[in-house]
Length: 511
Ligand SMILES: Nc1nc2c(c(=O)[nH]1)N[C@H]1C(S)=C(S)[C@@H](COP(=O)(O)O)O[C@H]1N2
Ligand SMILES: [Mo]
Image 1 (cartoon, protein in one colour):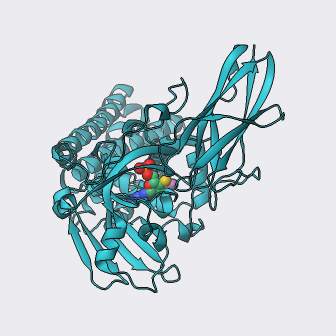
Image 2: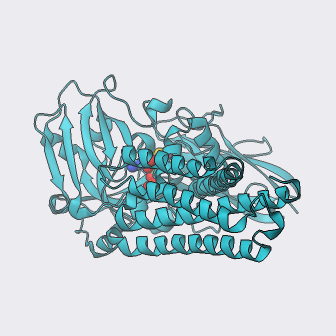
């Protein structure tokens, strides 16, 4: 490389790399959208990253980005891809064809990951290979068209030609990405299938939610969480698309006889409706990874009774279509509680992101040990024989939801007008139930809040306490009292390994 051209040339080479990766990604996504929706290069590599990431990294991601963790991951991947591509451009400049080979190598890695991770999709390798080869070819072409040959720098392609070639390539890449999204949308038949589902009326209906269960205080979480506001936590970068017509559930393992249930068979069974609060073990004290819905489903206990469970078994390992697993203590699925094989959520078929067509919900247990979405398999087994997705990553084997109270009103850190005001929040210990909530201000005496009407022991409950706010900065704390006589512990603990604990404490300025 001659000296005069080196800086400008390097910029052009890096730009060629980035334009090439855009077009490569666009083509890969387009091929995936049309022939192998589960093998989108971005999705398989992102999914692989999620699965190999250490759990502390996931905790940090959830803490930083909450339910936007997936958008953050995709953004991060895009930035890393751009950096690698720029580096590949520079390398191509120094040692042709090593830069182009980087694209090919990335394509091969993507193809391997896609093949390993796809559930038997024979063409899963194709999108990544197309992306890798296209990236390599486009990089070579761009370099040729936009970078002056070393021998006669003055005579090489001008600025205009550089901008035209790189710009056109990048624009094509963006167009391919947009097109791939459109293609995916038209291929999205499962959403259409969901729209045609008519859920049967429950054989056992839940009583109407009492009007007095909802205090309707501004800023307080509604006692029934609308589906669109329900938190979503899972390891699926792309929401699994399970057509009910193709769905079945296999119950096997330590049973007298295997049971296979299809969608039509499930809907023909007597379904039960139940209000159940679902919480995530990653929820921090005061956090909002919790929601309450009216679920419709078939009691898991009935299904297990049909299969005939061995007396030696103590766990049910449920598996999702995407390979996620949860290990649920057997007694939580066979005792009197309403653990459901759920098909309905707040009067609708499950939203796709919440497990359509069928998921589990078990009152009293954190989601990671009980609430498998897109569930396809129940294996009756033992804790000493099998372990599940999160338990193999260091989370506790048993996951009962802890006794917790949260202050929603006023919001932590907000300022409040002095005078008559209200403190309000939510409290829960699903399946045990909440008996009361106590509040104290600035370390003063505990005062008993008023509970709204409790829907059931399986749900959270709203509470409130009138407060005459005096000017100054105030610290407000709350703690829940359970129906079995316990007072929420003040001992703090982080979410790992079995759920956060400690009193929720907020600070507000009254003026
Ligand atoms: N298939 C599958 N099911 C899953 C998970 C998952 O990652 N994959 N996550 C579990 C966890 S950790 C929680 S807290 C709940 C959350 O359910 P939601 O997203 O419907 O709120 O789903 C559970 N079921
Ligand atoms: Mo969770």
